[in-house]
Length: 258
Length: 170
Image 1: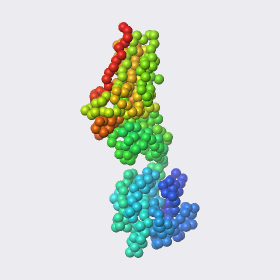
Image 2 (image 1 turned 90 degrees about the vertical axis):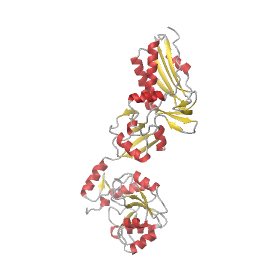
Image 3 (image 1 turned 180 degrees about the horizontal axis):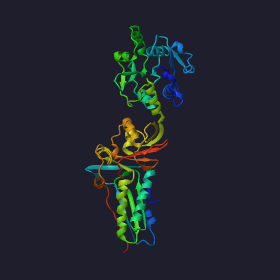
Image 4 (image 1 turned 30 degrees about the vertical axis):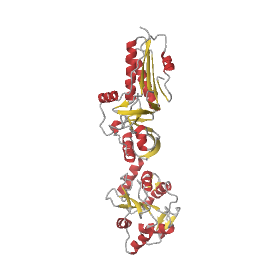
């Protein structure tokens, strides 16, 4: 779409700033990968950089990072993923397979590896160099050829990227429904299945019904929604109630007092 | 406050005392006890867990409803939470009234409603070493029961021996 996608703004922040904040919550250090001619670019100039030292394109960025700090694994993120969430990164990081060249999500669209939301291991450096020397330039094809630990996406939209003005407009509209923090408490069977009695989480669900769907995907609750009641702020509630920031939500499994 | 939880044994004597008033001619109570058998499984102990903030509100509403529906004097319900052994009292309901009929009715109403409406959960531990949340595990994938079926189901799962203190006069 003929614009620098890292500089696109959402809620007044550039996508690059958003990506730095997001990644910074999960890894020790965050860098932006730049071409040699981008080092003075105002969007990037204030950030720690990894300057391409090995050709062009994303594969050059990955190789340059692995060359700059050869003993660490790299969480590599594209700068055009406005929907990427803490949940999606957390899920990826928890399932890292250090024995593979990379741990990556499968695309929700074609099932192929997503190389630009992936953990790249130091062991991939040499094979990447060979691949590039042999004329290869596509990190996705590299992962298909060499294999990677692949994960099913939990949120099918998390890795949708923005390529057209329409997609940008859509992303802004969607993100305007800013994720809000809710407090969830779990009791009885659901406490055991969630492995916790309470948590504060960010969600874009706007009703208890939507929230329950999200949590079923995360924790595999066995109770169907029509077996439950729901309480918001310690009072019974409709499933379609509009949730507000800070609401305390409790799902109520079939009761058995007396 | 007409409904409360306790983590220790229910003190029926002092609770009964809370119901006494000179206009009452008698009192009816119900005690629910931990029974050794449920749906063919040998039960060794129980754990009760409650969403107390809402449970106390809902329990209070139930007792207040009973006081409106039946011409009784006072009513109170106390429920245990935590780990209970066989024979322990899990719940106590007491109602004082001028006459016995409405006291029985109100007591029955309160225990029935508490079982259906108050967010309290019961985990049974079985002789076999197995355990399960009552009403949650075996029918986890079944569609929602109708209200009538739920009542029947709850009756079925009833652990309790009914012990009624007869009104001491009239």
